[in-house]
Image 1 (cartoon, rainbow, N blue to C red):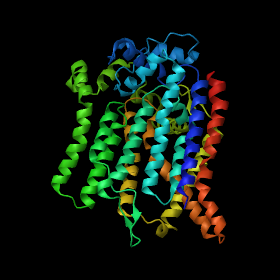
Image 2 (image 1 turned 45 degrees about the vertical axis):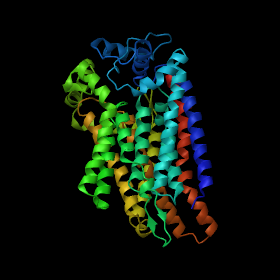
Image 3 (image 1 turned 135 degrees about the vertical axis):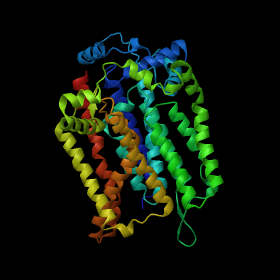
Image 4 (image 1 turned 180 degrees about the horizontal axis):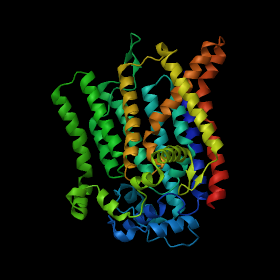
Amino acid sequence: MLHPKIAYVLLALIVVLFAVLGVLYAVNTPPWQAPDEPAHYNYIAQVAGHGCCPVIERSDWNAEQLEELKAAGFPDNIDVSHISYEDWQPPLYYLLLVPFFKATGGSLIFLRILSLIFGVVAILATFTTVSRIFPRHLILALTAAAFVAFIPQHIADFASINNDGLAEMLLAIMMVIAVGYVGNPTALDYEGKCAPYDESMRPHVSALGGMLGLIILTKLTPIIPAVVILTVAIAWRWRIEGRSARWLFEQVAWGFGLALLIALPWLIRNAQVYGFSDLLAMRAHESVVIGQPRTADEIASKGDAAYLNEYLTTTYHSFFGQFGWMGVPMQPRDYVMIGAFLIWGLIGLILINTRFHDLWKLVPQQRAAVWILFITLIVTIVVYAYYNLTFVQFQGRYLYGMLIPLGLLVASGAWGWVLLLRSFTPSKSLRRALTYLPLVAVAWMLVLSVWALYQYVIPFLD
């Protein structure tokens, strides 16, 4: 077992390293060289100048002109004030940044660095989620947090202006609340058995509903995963704990009722602007972004096999590192190393579920939390695939809502190797040293993030 004080020191180190790297990415990425950054920035500027909230119009989108600017690398002093095709987005992220926009005169770098706060909270939420599920294996929580912190593209995403970071942070906090709601962390009672978190100390379901409401006000893509988290958490407690139908109704009413109450002003506003049939402004957005690549057209021109290959390859590359407006990928060897690392972790997961299954028994509360995370991972992938049925959006950042469960899988896979090596190691001191193997194994991604900054971001985006 890892001593909590050591764990917190290592967690602080991870957060500091992430923050330093984030600032370096924010400062060294040229203006507007991040996906959709001009449009997000202009949303903030519009709210700062005219109040909330802007309305998306046909003049907000010019596909040909945008492609020309991207190809030219957004020359210095270029006017991007006309790029505002994100005006349909929910307003919370932009409202939060407006005071800082006004205070700094609209400083792009300052707003980028400010967005790193969302990343710090997401890393802390990753650690908290995993540590509540496995309170006696804090190395798993540290490893998951380090994995989330040191994905190069993830750092680049937090170091730019967009609403992804706030949405991811809110979803991560919701996962923390959910694992506590179902009874984690567990503790050993006087009889040496695992007992769930005392019910009086568990968060109320309204906390989950509140987070869902804030997510609705932030970004559309994480709404369905958030709904699933709330639904699965309530359903698990109702079924396993033998709750009454009245209890179930009350939990659903509290959770979804509060979420609707929080989101209601935005939905009413959209009904007035776009009509009751378009409460999320998705149809308004689709009617404006004419010229954006469509999936049907891509399949017709390239064929099913070529399209699928591009879909999977680009998603994988852009999840870990494909910078700028997807125009600066890393070298193939970098993706091969990442793939080898993931395969290594997958073998470790197989070891846990076969050879060391008896050493990895979970109590019901832990299983519930793991299932919540696993289902969130699957649903995030499905939502991403569904969105790509209409538009060609092979951007791995849309999958970052599944980073906490993915981080747990990576950490658990590394722990499988620890169990294997310990089975061949009689030395107690060496067995204790092996505890740190998962964190050491994922530390190479820190090096990869530094490498990506100085080998790809700075040379090719400057």
